[in-house]
Amino acid sequence: MVTTQFRKAATQLNLPGDINLTTALSVWRRNLTEYSHTWMTNVLPNFFDPVLYLLGMGLGLGMFVGRGVNGLSYIEYIAPGLMAASAMQGASFETTYNVFVKMNFAKLYDAYLATPAQIQDIAFGEQLWANTRGLIYGCAFLLVLIGFTLAGNRIITSWWALLLPVAMLMTANMFALIGLTFTASIRNINYYGFYYTLWLTPLFLFSGIFFPLENPNMAGGHAATIAWFTPLFHAVKLMRGLAQGPLDWSHAVSAAWILAVSAVLSVVVPRRMRKRMIH
Image (cartoon, rainbow, N blue to C red; front, side, top):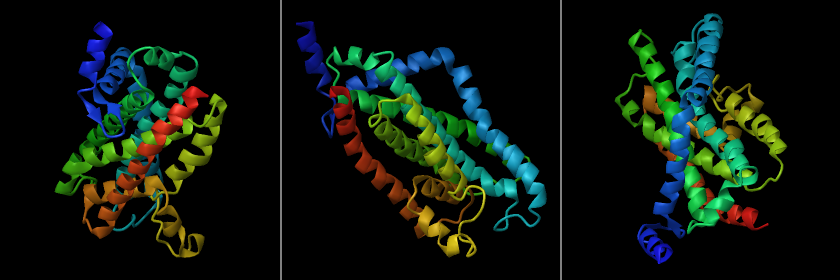
């Protein structure tokens, strides 16, 4: 009787794709509860990583980049891109190692499935939590950039920067879905070495964070064209435009690119997760 009543109440909040929002939020809340006990040890490593890049590359290497880049000092140029990378890393780690451990070693998903929860509810709950973590890391880094701006740097110079948390959430959501797709496709945790080394690291290095890709000497002038088909490139471009302006149609295209990829993967992920759990 109780189970029947619970199912009836839960199905009152369904999303497209037959996702039960009530159940998905229960998965999100469970992750939040666990995270509240360990947030210090989780936040600090991911927070300091982009900050150290900002200081080491922006101030250190920046001393040798005399005229700066596009009229900005080097630290001002790389800061928005590092903010995009921070959101990417927060969401990616959550939907790779953490989800894999919960699925395969802790057998947490087996426990979920013993309740009215369905696979698509679990996947969406993990996606929401990865978005939350990406937003936490991105906003923490944004506070650092605001501090640099108040100290006299031109990192945040546009009122469009008020929309940066939205861009962070879009970035985190896209990489959460990418991470879930990969996690649902592997059975050996060692494959994440390939994911991070051959996927995330090249994105981090060659998505326009550290140097303009429009240089005609790079890849025969096609570097920007190649990068256009990669996800972090659009996140970097969007956040740089929102932080420093001016915005133009290309930033709207980047936002649409992120949303389109996320929409496609939101259909792929539940199917991959279902296949992974069944087999």
